Image (cartoon, rainbow, N blue to C red; front, top):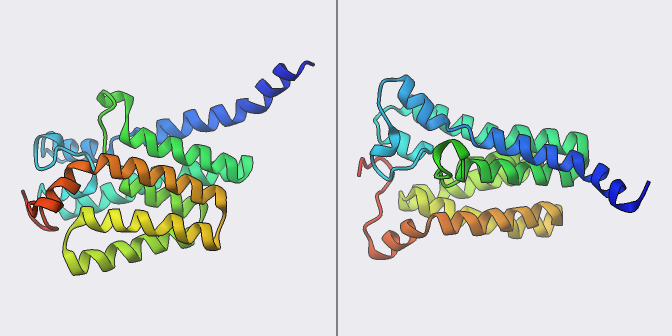
Length: 205
């Protein structure tokens, strides 16, 4: 068996993990739940996003909570399974694929959410301490500022540093990649934060 064939066989499980991770992450729960509840297309209100923060703008806190949980789980499950069957590298591959699937779902023309809930879910799947840290930083920042976007941005900066210091460098590297993508996806929010026009938590704008 030549080296190329051996590499192809070795890479096959990672490819499967990436595909399944992407498919899991690409399920647009926010859109599905709001339509099932008769609230129309969540992309037509607020930020136009399919995530929990925008679902909250429908006024239905239950749907927003369900969206947050499901968007997190679609990152947790692939990361857990990938790590279980293929080790940390497999979890990283599946987790990143799920994160990308949420942000770039093929079913919605590659226009999905901003990835915060799925980011958290991936962290819980690979290192629950970092998932908990993300939530604590998010909550603390949100209590002080009442800005969901700023809370997420701060948390995404803290997690990779702490993971690198006390955890696994491979997971820290994944967190860095997700942070960069999350910041790019939040560039409009960053502009509004700087201009003082960003919507606060609870606002319908």
